[in-house]
Amino acid sequence: MFDVYKETENRYYRNFNNDYSLLIVLILLEKYQTKERDDFGVCNIFQLHEFIKNDYSKLKEITNELEDTNDYSGINDLILNKIINIGDELNLFKLRDVGVFNFIEMQSKVLEKAIKNDDDFPCEVDYYSSVIDEIFELKKLNEKRIEKLINNNKFNRDEIYAPLYLDKYYNKKISLLIDIVPEDIVFRITYLDEGTKIVEKEVKIFINKFSKDLYKDYAPDYSDINRLYFSKQIENFYTFINDLPLIKNTINIPFSTLENKGFEIVKILKHLEINKKIKINKWNDENFWKIDFTNLPITIDSLIKDKDEEQDIKIEKTTFRSGTLFFQNKQLNFDKKPIQKDLLNTLFKKPKYKWTNDEIWEDWGENDLKGKTLKFYTASDEINKTIALDTGIRDFLIKSTKQIQINQKYIN
Image (cartoon, rainbow, N blue to C red; front, side, top):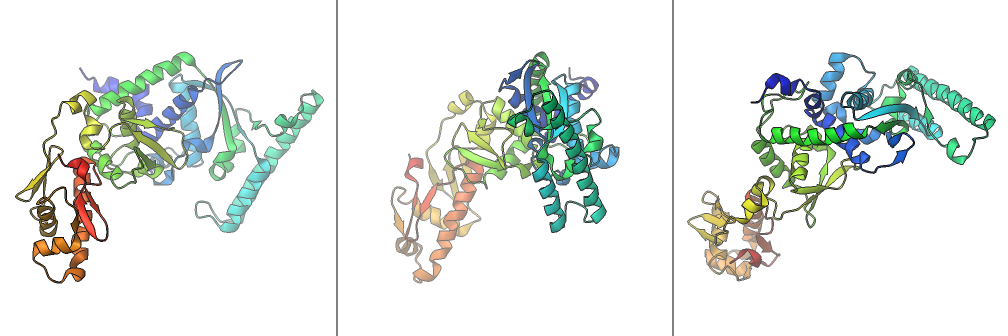
């Protein structure tokens, strides 16, 4: 039995139910697999901006939480605290330090933003003066660090450029910088092996329940929309990627899909990854997620059904009759699209033939050939779009400026 209170109040649900929070977990788990160790265990250093994959000011879950709690100096401060809380609450890692580096570049970046009057930050002189003050205070601390290294005969080139790690009151020392230069804010963690294994297992359990709509009525915290059924989310996801370029079997999905209200991108991708429908290059990628699809053509069925279930489907012969295209076990109706219907009627008279523009117009009984060629040229594009939407196949018709034909690999 599905115990609502037990399910929605547990620590894993709280940290997985939000896409941006689940993404933090997946990036942390991915980095754990590198197994980089020191004397304390599996240890990694992160830059804060690795966890900020989009303009998070457009995500209601984040802005609503920021306004409601009033506990953070800004979005980046919220994200850093979210990461630290996830590590603590899920017993995933222990935070060792938070620090900064690149002092010279940091100062240049701040001055550049001040000169540009960057829309994302206040333009008041006092604001940037306070930011510069933060940098100079950090420089003083770094100079003391280097002086101590010299006195202890531990000074070397690597130490010069090492981050300056701060004490537990780090938030007071970077309260302004954290929103301007997240790439220069670093933190160091030590993974807890046992806790990490449990979290990996719990992610799979959560995604399985999500795909079965057990969380349908429990939208993420601070969300302003209702959660859609999983099947509808898959359908919306399929429609979305259908407009993206497919290179061999790869589609690059932009981070801006985190804003999409029609599907929860991180959960959908993780579900597809678990079920071996896709391979994700890296959760912690730059600019976009590079996704390799294991089954082509990409269809709604290929995203939902098991491979064995797909193989059991008997593919019917490709035909066109009475305004309906029978293709890939689909019935696509073109009856209310007269030009597309006429073009398909002509092409299926000789399905393996390369029809020239003149031959098509002659078959239609038209005389003014050149002036109307664009009409069926555009119709072939629309036919391909309609077929792609239902089957994932984008090259049913092949055309040039002088001829059109049905792609022979789809003709039995």
